[in-house]
Image (cartoon, rainbow, N blue to C red):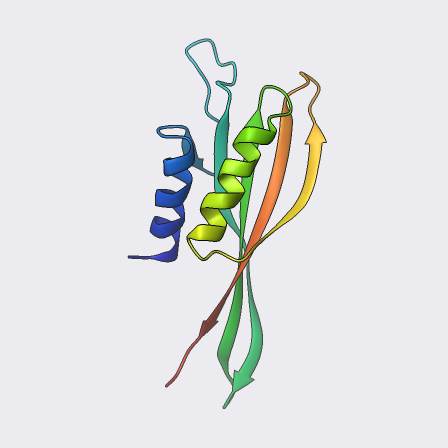
Length: 116
């Protein structure tokens, strides 16, 4: 199972059928359906080389929890699920949108080592 599949399973356990890759979840009237989680890969950088080939890469994933208003219960449930599943995450920012919904953004850095 790939890292993204594992991550999706954990996130979907927190908010079933409310998790999407890279885009908002909207209803019939194109308005957001709260709460939901967006996850995506946002970076893939070479950390070190061996014999002129990438040996270690750092892949960065972003998880955004979007709620209609501040929701500490859902935040704690998400953080507990990530922690119990062995994901090393950081909460990097939180901000209020124009419609007063709240985005809470997490980041996971995954090291990929390639042996040849």
